[in-house]
Length: 209
Image 1 (cartoon, one colour):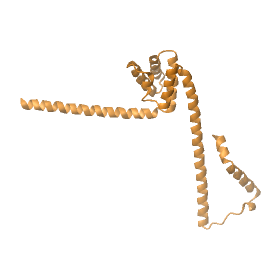
Image 2: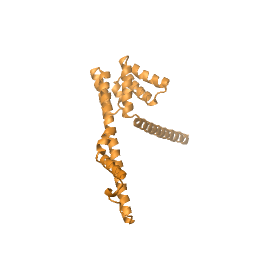
Image 3: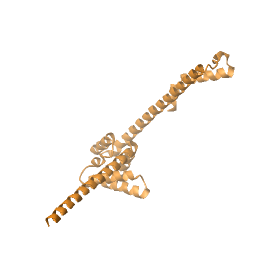
Image 4: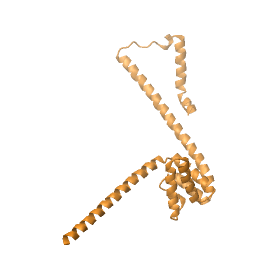
């Protein structure tokens, strides 16, 4: 009888240990899934969600706005991420917290602060409109920097390739090029045009961007 009791106690402890391990494993899987979804919920996605949420909020309550987003995702086959965010906000509201508390785990701090400012002033739509304009300006500015950086790298690559080609030609004892003055007229014209373009490449890069 004593052995049976010990066996049962050990069996119970083993089950608890296995159960705790499974719970921890499931929790880690959920965390991985959340972090993956959070990476996919980019700044642009955050902005679009806030604008949609604010537009629904203008004609109803915060809960109505959450339900409207969930419904639009289910009916219009919209991005599932929006539904997950809306459900988290709805859960926060049901627990007595603010909308921004439900947004906390999904949104970058600047977007969150903008929404909180809108909550405090009671002019969410106006605040978000200004934020959207500033966000677009910042996005265009960053794209311009990236484009110019790419162009600089391309030009550096072309220059390096040219230098290497000349060095290799010299090493292989290739005949040296004729002076430009001895080129045919059409070749000299082409050279002058390319030289002019090279001098104004920075201005061209800004105009392209």
